[in-house]
Image 1 (tube, rainbow, N blue to C red):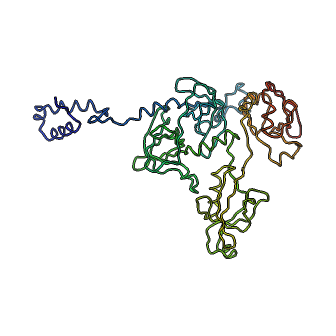
Image 2 (image 1 turned 135 degrees about the vertical axis):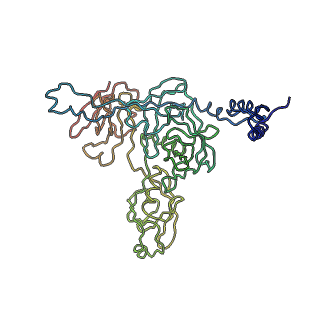
Image 3 (image 1 turned 60 degrees about the horizontal axis):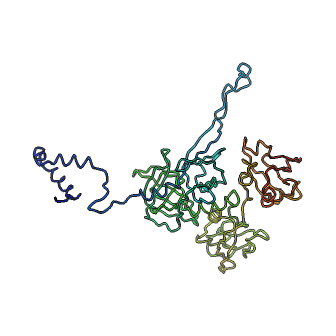
Length: 465
């Protein structure tokens, strides 16, 4: 029996379309057309050649995907009857808060440490986080930290029976590479959209749109993987629908997301880069005064003493022409470029000094103090965020420094123990502490904590047990 190929069926259909209806019935064309429509799904093979499928890749990725359930208490519109006049006649007040639950897609990036990567906006304001694994298990999640700039959040769970996704290299993505987005626009973490990269990320660009991967695999939030199932991005949003009935998805490249997570694990908050100089745009008047023939660039007007900028050789009057791989035209260019990097990273600079170009390398400093989520340090501090004191705070009423409570969630364990925002912890179990490092050592293997706290102009002991 002769084997009928897809090409034979298409040719037969074209012939049948040209015949009158009675002839088509005579030759059995209608029956063939009905049979073809009944089997319109993509076949497993065409001419014995297997049709490509994303199913094997998805089966590998699926075990690493999780559902992040965040619960938050939000304020609702004030009840009009919750007024002193009406309360004279109505004894009972109506609740002014309600609980909000949100679900989003997350992915396990480290099975040994129990780290889950998800979007910052998905856990914003959450008082409780639950991680639901692919096999149906539910685990309590601890928020390690967040970064709103790149929409990254890191959650920690008990590292038992976890399967981490394989990490890719977003720097290797090229325009035209195929990618797959896995998101939850309909509340289903298995919703997938395939597409191609229209623009790879350029992290060192002064154009903020170029810091993200752009592709037509747009599902809003979720993750972006290559055809091998390797994680290459974290989806953060999509553009409005265009006239061509298409959308563009934006994803934080995984290389940047991992930089952020390393900062969150170490400090609890990203330590943005800072160059201790003051600059202003190089105008035509300043260019003439400095005997510079060009107007592009920025002039350094001040260099902080003993800073990394001074140690790199930067001087007042230097004209910064290039930073990294970017030409600097104005002050905004330099600020934008530095703000996308982290403390400790090196920044190469090309400056013009007295008509001569010089290449310098400056190590960026931290623009903010390190902090740590209390739950990661001790279970009795759940809900509190701790940070190091800056030099001014350390010399204001606290002789030997201490640890600053930067935030406390109402109703948390730390809150119930009496810990409050702006408290300064100076000792633990009568052991002095002056920073997060010494604080961690002081509470190690301690079930009960007795904190000596400075609050305003007073001091007290708080017992946590």
